[in-house]
Length: 109
Image (cartoon, rainbow, N blue to C red):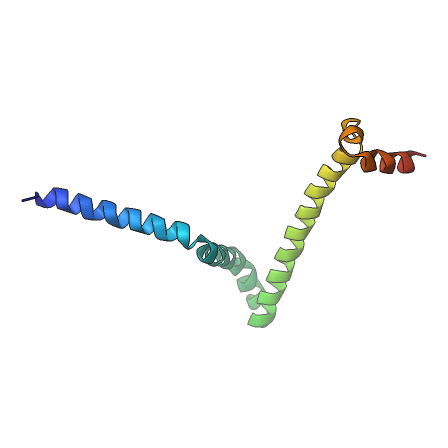
């Protein structure tokens, strides 16, 4: 006969392993839901403020989403532009990518 506390620990361990397995398997489904929940919490103060200033609820949500998408795209292009400029204007890029050297030659002359 197994003691009650050991049986409880065994059940808890089985449940923990099962939940972990389901999270790993379901991450393609659960990750977008988690991001949607995060964005809804982050955008709630903006939409609430817009609603208090007499903007319709659906329009406030659209404005908040559009502003968020613009900020995300702007940050993406700023980061990638920095990486692209480092790639095209270093001397080592000429050896690894001949096209980069040609682009630099065209830009300089």
